[in-house]
Length: 254
Image (tube, rainbow, N blue to C red; front, side, top):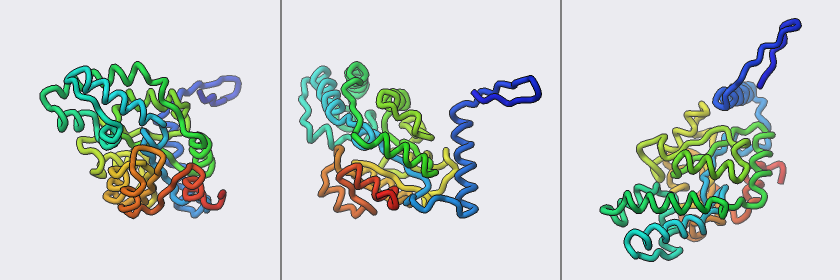
């Protein structure tokens, strides 16, 4: 709530989160244009994947897959299988694995996942990194294959909703990672260009999407992706800890 004084009168203007985000965009663009952007930023815009990057949710995702398949079709899911699907949308996975039962599988997955959201944890150091990026003048966002409601619930549960400027979720694009469309949609919401932005993710799909979008590609190894597979894609940076990621994104603070 912002109060605008005019003599003894006060006009209360309620600014939506979208308007506040655009104010931040305008301020940041002015900094880019005047050369005032702080020098301690690798990129003035940093977009993040959610699961396995900001949210320690891999165990819950694998358990949700196992519950869905075991309940609907009696199939048990290994951790390796479940991790290999992370980064795809749920409809993509279920249509590929068992098209006749895709609807029932997705419903069972969501029921289990929603009921056990509290099992999702944060990664130590991530909230501070996001806050410091914002303090340094960066715009931040989340681009995820997760549905909007589920992604919003995860961010709120982790206390990260207040340090994220935009969310690009499954519903925002017809094509999904490794297609660059979701990343470009996130940038469009911020009025930013790929050359100004980095994308941070834990999966092969994330690195491929960043490359296809023309963004700086940063891979992290604490999520679902296998380090060797991520390294084989030659991302611009490969980080095994949040401290290493901080050193990449905020080089003069390291």
